Image 1 (spheres, rainbow, N blue to C red):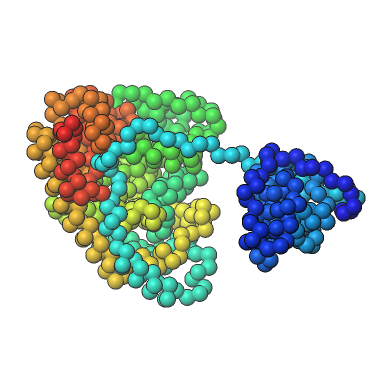
Image 2: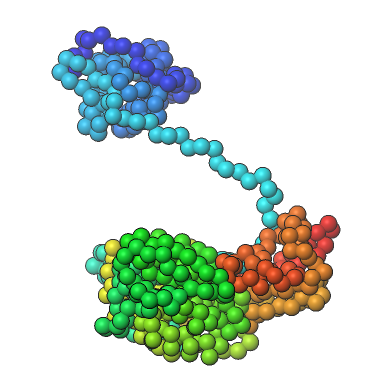
Length: 552
């Protein structure tokens, strides 16, 4: 570029404010001269040249780059010659030349012999972020929404000490890309923990460490989608029968309209184009987010009503599903424990249909009135994927969980895990293995269990005092209860509206329904899913009182 060429004024969206320039007394003689001589269009560069000499080069490049990407200097603008801009800003010409060359190399500027330097036409301004959404509705002052533990119980001192020990003990090579199955010492520790506390048949070679139960279900779904209509767990097994008892084969590749099955008297139709998508059954009521996890990997979900003993194996068979996701130790949200008869029947279905049961043991460690119900996986480790995490015992933000996988699926799950995220963070795994090995995790579980039992008792007592006649179920385990309020406290919509005005967040039981259990909507009265783990006993009592007397 020739410095003797005439330059045009840059096309800017608006002029930079003049108060960005540093005072002459602070910036030295060069900046003072720049403040007097710079044209208004280039004042946006003045703060960068007022910095100490060592910082000016990069600061000038950053300021010019930001001006281009923000649209303050528009595409197609011809920049001043380096000699002229250096004189205007009171800096050396080399500083300007270096900035032009760097931004030309990055594609923000273009130049040619005798043609000057221009802002590249390829640059597009960043779209400004819109205003943050605000909710004018009153934020609840307190909430009984389930799913959150008391995060103040997180063992910070033990965690910090374990972090130091783990980091000191890890060899350098362990900080490379991890084994997607998980750190061997954590898988060994988890095998002992799960066998001892939950009755899981846990071979370390079949344990995969993952980012919570959500990722475990995604991995299972990806495997189901990959297997399609082929054998799942039984080598050479015949394809599953067609749904609804019709002929033609459930997994035929031709386009067809199929009936998922008469579930609770309701036919669910689905039009399938191309290869049929595999189906998993989900509990109703249950966790709605599961449907989205499976849909993201090409697996459809069908809801099945949860009865007093769990889902019905005969209804499960009628769907033609390849798998089912269950919370058998403490069903969410109803709070029931699957009966021995239902557990046996579901395992019989899995063996007969070459199906897979996925056990979400989300709060299996928290049982208050007797020993925890053992895991379903212990009855048939070849047909059940067991999943768990530290989300309730430590904190959901850790994103640390595990799955125990039937042997025929291990390699495929591990490969899916590898392609998904290359494995779980090594230091977190080493730290958790240390907590388990030293007994700190068991102590944490006992601490949480004592605290949550006290809070459950406070909630049950407060409901009996302020809402006489309320029946509370699901109290033997977990971090929530179901409160069945008498009809006189309804109707449901009015009760929830009063709670909102009182600043108390509530979740009705039917909010977790998918439609296959119409009795959830038909019964009179108010039925609530009340999570209590995150509230102190005094706050629980105050919130129940506030619900009963919202105007006080």
